[in-house]
Picture 1 (tube, rainbow, N blue to C red):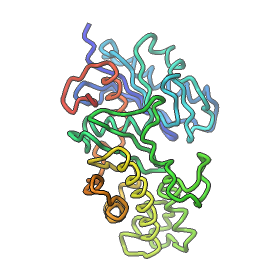
Picture 2 (tube, helix red, strand yellow; picture 1 turned 180 degrees about the vertical axis):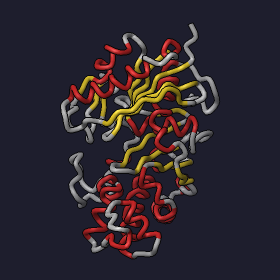
Picture 3 (cartoon, rainbow, N blue to C red; picture 1 turned 180 degrees about the horizontal axis):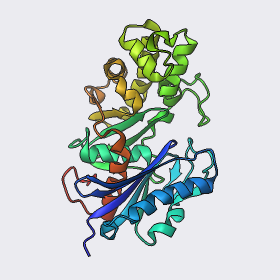
Picture 4 (cartoon, one colour; picture 1 turned 45 degrees about the horizontal axis):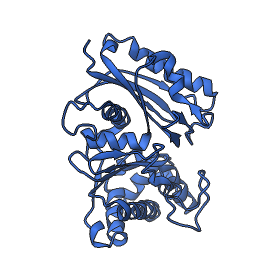
Amino acid sequence: MTTDLVAAVDIGGTKIAGALVTGEGELLHRAQRPTPARESAAAVLRAVTDVVTRLTESGDWSRVRALGIGSAGPLDARLGSVSPVNIPVWRDFPLVEGVRGVVGELPVTLVGDGAAIAAGEHWRGAARGRRNALCMVVSTGVGGGLIVDDRLYAGPTGNAGHIGHISVDFNGDLCPCGGRGCVERIASGTNIARYALAAGWRPADQGGDATTAGVAAAAAAGDPVAREAFDRSARALAAGIAATATLVELETVVIGGGVSQAGEVLFAPVRRALAEYATLPYVQGIDVVPAQLGTDAGLVGAAAASWRESGTFLSRGEAGN
């Protein structure tokens, strides 16, 4: 029997997506469900297993050798459990055990969503060919994953690289994680919009759009308050990047997620602030680039992690060989 595919699932606070993935990173037989994050733990698991079941019903399921899952975290990959901040009904939830009823004894690899994005961008995206990279998602939260010495480094529990919860302001606001002044509490899309509105920005000129996209449009048009909201976010991101680079020596930082769609409104101040914060010789000159995989990054990355775990790499950029 030919087993030249892996199944991949990407679990987030708003949607659960799945696909079969080839060794070249091509996505086949997609399935998707909304995440019932405010219902019950069992309801969220049913949504996950429904997505996986739809994949098993494809004509190619017999070719699948393993399942890779990228989930919002934190998680414990050793135990196969997850406690996503944005899925409050899952706390220490035995996710791997929960999908066994559908996939049986098929090998299952569980990684955090930030690690999945890093694996995906390293395999098929903006970090391809780079041996040391930080890949970030800046959206309603801020997550990340690390590529170290050409391999995904997820850490013992699967949470390494979670830059969103580095504290960059020890007198800052309390973060939902329990810390203070976290990168996420300043730099996420939610907090960019919150800060802009509190500082007096009004979204009338953006058709009443009070979201981060509205703030980004206003900043691009030169609104000083909107620009300050993005500059503040950029400084927090740059401080977290500089701290990470000081520890692990990075070549490249890849930024994706909804906030990255602001383009140079975000990237230009991140690069300026990083030049101020990353001053030691070995952390200067880090490339900061947009992600390339878009909304498929989590699926491609979950597949990449699964290929890596199985020890099989079918094409170069090879899933973090």
